[in-house]
Length: 124
Image (cartoon, rainbow, N blue to C red):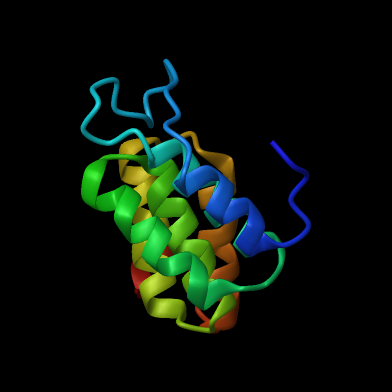
């Protein structure tokens, strides 16, 4: 496989490849082999600040794995990057609902509260 220079190159490489993994975020059947690729694409898009482009990939993962704390967190990160704080807070809360010890979601939920100028989760 060639080296990927852009987020689009990486996205294409992962989406077109039939990946399988023992990770709980990837369906072991042949029905949804692209979940891991979607996560890699979302990470790359978030890292490059392409928040709007990351949302469809996170939603695809959530459609296939609705109880994935990671997928909810990625959606929250994209929404946070777009300034959609209430929606981001909901996504981070959903992530924590599936994995209450997931520190990145907890930290980002706190960040959304700062942006909303609220001091506690109860305020939302």
